[in-house]
Length: 433
Image 1 (cartoon, rainbow, N blue to C red):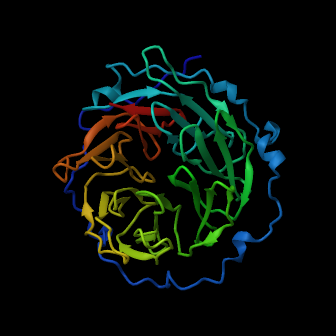
Image 2 (tube, rainbow, N blue to C red):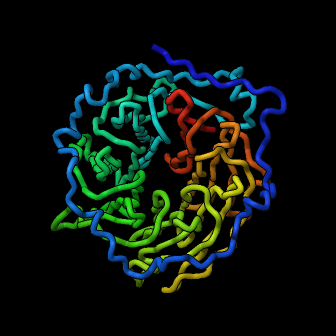
């Protein structure tokens, strides 16, 4: 059964492109300078026992890998496996209001944003948390005229937040999620086979972040119920492979962390603090420092978690400000053992939909950056940075579409970019150019 893709038709004047230089109302002003925090982010916290404490009411692995549908009280996932894979026609309302961007309806019953990941080449994997709280997955291996996406695959589990995923190498994926019991859960794919869901423990408050800096490393980052950031890493050596214990890296988070890497032995964590400011904590800020640095106050007035990308010693972060605009800050050319000075916050304009932070990807080794937002009219927009000019496109480019979630972008096949969102009906929408 085909599930039609429906977009609301907008009358003339209903769509207003985000204005790059739009000014915020005084009571919503974005505060660019760091403010003094009421707590010391770098002082050791002694109140983190709850994250590792034994609790009652936790799911068993047997339950999590095959949760009874009578408990979840939903129809089997096969009810949406007949996906509507039709590309939108040129007469659709989304196409009429788009200056670029083509759209594909991948169906689904998602709650929250989708999670795309690519391990390289033409392979693409897409994950969602369905309305039945189970994880769903579909993939595609080639993009010929006759190839198609596979059907949605039921991955079981019992979640209350969207999943996160990363890939260490070809034919490998690490999948993470926040269970309805508050624990972090993990499932791995290797050489054509999925393992079972495994409990990683913890007391998690938001959806996790996943990151890999190389073929022998993967890591998951979470915000605990008391606002601290916790980290667990997987290392593979010639002698052994496995997960280390949870490591507490402190902080006072208000929302999920974001983890990015520019290469071997480096990770940066960015987040929104409970004071509304952006905060940053690096691991391996230089080739001689394989340790966590201190939390750094980046200022700002954030309305949601930040997005980030990194390559070759550079990192860029993006956030929805309390004024509704997209804001941007850059760390360039890190070659010293101490944290360098960041650039100033840059107002990129835009008018983001409530509850939808931006997303960004670095393309082709940092030759380009593409940042995406969901506008307040539910259409998607983007800006592109070009390394040859070190400049952003002047205005937001209308990509069309109609989504209720934040955008989630992925790079694949040496420079291609796809971006996904969840429609009001729960179906996953794919935008490509």
